[in-house]
Length: 258
Image (cartoon, rainbow, N blue to C red; front, side):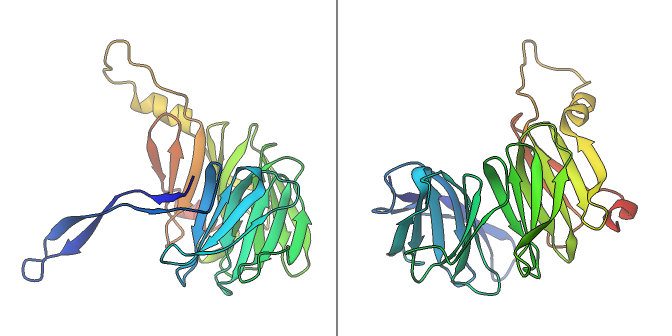
């Protein structure tokens, strides 16, 4: 199975009217990299791409789809999350099983560094803007905060009652992050306090929205939260859930300042 980029639609402006013009981009398939299902992707600011797959398979690609290198991560656990370093485009962080490996994409022979900080399988990694802290969310519902300079865990955040599926540091706030999980909750965390300062339950929000008329026999999946993303301003987040809804959140300014 190769790396396949789905077709996209981009928006451009007409030179005179300024109105948006939708133009399709043809799909491009990159092949020769993986033989099993691809689980995660990330791109560097220089156009390099890394992909992780089942069985510990990790591949590096050039911006034109050229295969730059590949390696089998130790333990052969599925590669569940990949992050490029914002300060060093050739440095890569990859989670596999309960382990985080630091790699040099120019030489995918062995890990530059390795950390075993989580007790269960890691689902998501996130770096803060200063690249001083790395967050890893796992199946136990815990989020471990790794100090990359001291090379040790400085915080262990546990409030989710089910799998913590996604975590994201807030831009411009290196001591604050947002998480979501299969307990249908989204949480805003303060690392100084080591606790959430704001929590919302997507199922409760959904119930309020669905109190109006519904189609007969309409069924919805539970609002199990799978991914979260924070806007560049740091004060707005979006969360994707299993009920097919995309939820936007804007906690009050008092909570964001925590």
